[in-house]
Image 1 (cartoon, rainbow, N blue to C red):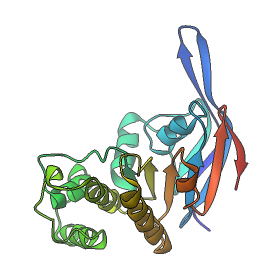
Image 2: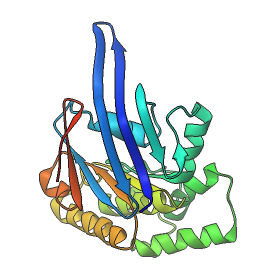
Image 3: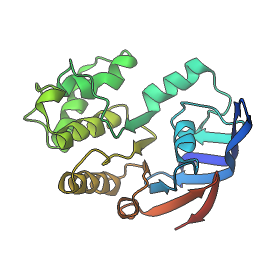
Image 4: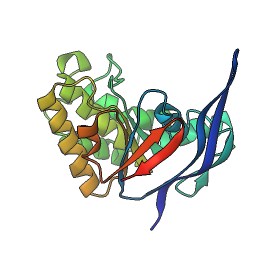
Length: 225
């Protein structure tokens, strides 16, 4: 089975005034295509560091990171930027939508970064809007949407570039329990349809929605469920 992401014996160290902080200590993790993984752990466990590495927002101190068939371990800033834009789908706790753009335009943002304006791309974004239940809100702007609707836009946007995986960082953190359940149900449905999802969360009930849980503590994988 092809891997969407593979992390091999990765360490990450930060130089601080008081010395060196080891955020990750020899972490190895494989995420096959079609998997749904929840990365969990207490504050300071290394969740955010691992997320940043998987999202090509940072580089490891040592070890190797493969995304699909690309070795991104020592990629340049420009190469990492291109990979983020073209092959990773981000879903954030705070949605990160552009307030001046409509629903459809927000979904299309990853394609703008790649200079893609083909009719097939527009058709795909329309299909994604319909998939997340927002085909009747295409001309609305984020301020005209509920929190749940904004997160649905963010999920559709994350899929516009046909990513290796969707990287969801506390995707229900700003939502009430009913709306959070709806978003989690949508993620499960997307995974059933073949989308690979890596979710970072500190909430056990949300983590259990995934197929498996990776527990981090003190920069190491404590256990895999």
